[in-house]
Image (tube, rainbow, N blue to C red; front, side, top):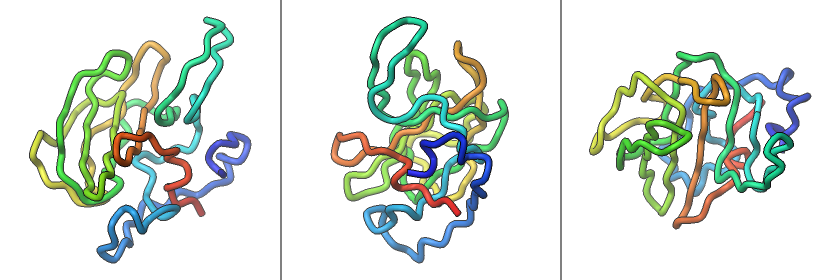
Length: 157
């Protein structure tokens, strides 16, 4: 996948234009917009080894480096299921997109949505923040309680 190779990230142009033509998320693999304008993955999906703590951990999403205060956009139409505090990620917005798909947006501030809100793809829902690791953003995509590698679903040019 293109986004996993950070040496490639400098050559990727990100297009956040939504042209889904009313298709459900299940038909949009490789076509979803990235919620933030950064492909610099600091912690990839799946098993990661922390050289400082010398432990393995499983990341159910991706973490990207991006300037604090950057816009966070909903990847697809959906309903805000909750805005919940999660340790290490701060407040997290959970959006239900139907067909078992849910997305999660963490390490955010200036939250612009609340539980029950209906959002359109490309709507700004928050801004990026920072945590103990510094400025960044955490994103997850799930289907039927199973984490998916978001990089396989994102459109890159």
